[in-house]
Image (cartoon, rainbow, N blue to C red; front, side, top):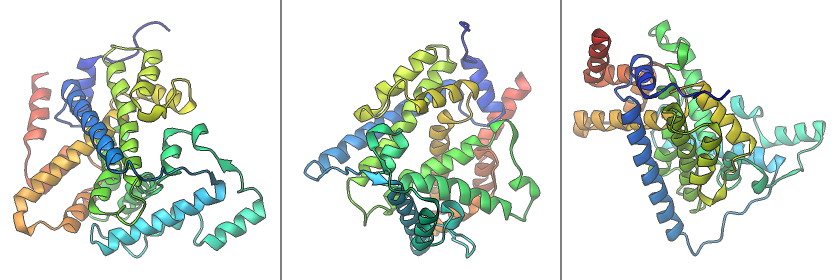
Length: 333
């Protein structure tokens, strides 16, 4: 196939505005992504300079060590969220739903029963995500457990309306689900979740952010038909710091193919969804002033369900201008 595979800027903008109900089309979304990339690389370099005299976080973990590290990270983040009153942690919340074992003793029993567990996972042979996780596990697994699994578990328990917790067709939930999960990575770090862990772990969080950029920027350019799939794979590797991505590795192939199959459905919305969450955060904080309570804000956001971000903003703040923008475009089309 030699024809352009991207849907084009106009179709991309239509999709974002009329399916995602986002106020941002291709141009606005691309601008947000580019500025976020500037910020992430700047912050990464500042962290590297700050930590320049510290030993590197070099880790050669066994499979058992990796699973134990996930266990420890998830219990740490659940305790942090509860103790620091970031969000309500209900009694039913259990990291074992994610890890598959309640205690490290259970993990060791399973390994003894099944064999294995001693194979060393070498960072240079793994994907970006694993390279980061082997050095600092918490942000990535927070994304997966708190950002996704716990999010969907909470939605299943919503009682106010079956529509709120219903599955969404056409990926119209991706700004909400991915923006929330990715936002947790850095925002919890700023709230202090990494304060008692090795300081260079902050570098790992910004490298995770950079990996999101390395996937989102080619996503936008492919759908604008400015580059093809081969060029997208090379661009992904080029803009990922430390050479932690290669054009021919499995993850890059998979992610770039996913981008072209799924316009506006994942990587670009990782970045714009986080930006929209922070927009809502700022508006609600300014609206409430001294009455703003972080846990109440997060709980109210999650209670709204997995619906487009602009609808959540309308409900929480009363600001409907983003919805009006979409409605006016539909009426004029």
